[in-house]
Length: 244
Image (cartoon, rainbow, N blue to C red):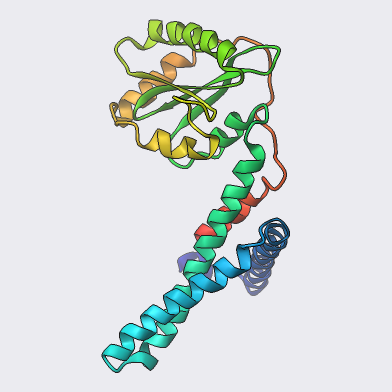
């Protein structure tokens, strides 16, 4: 409040214009994402309408039992819209990950979009065939995420694990290989997999470990952080949707 009171009229007007412009840009992003998703997802509209009707109808039905259905109708509409937005975001996310899946660098791209306090170092080891190992540091410990041909990344993982183990001592080291074969983790489930790992370290331990690991020089072939798969810009829309 004190900041706003200290602003001049022109500054207040400029702040309002900037806020309106940002809001307009967000609406534009969502609309563009909706158009893109609708072209590729034939079930999008039925899912959104169905979600809205089911939630709104359920709330209205509960109100009908207690004879307050008209009072609860606005609540049902609001919850129905919220449910439809959540469904839309989930389907956009699934579409983006399905397009990225299998592309070189897709795991690095997914790790770059992790939510939470994770410290990601992409491509700490790699091959000329674009196989790569990425290092993730968090409360579970050290997680090495590999992508590429299984017979090649197996050796990369083992080698990197030895390098890291020399520095981190008894700190748990996990390894994850992206893929759809037995023992592998699909790209779209990578974040859930990481969040389900046990929390073995405190915040201070993570920071101390990060300082140790920063001494490890990355080696292997250079590789971009990851592809920008068709529709990957929708990740900004997902963040916008979560903030709305």
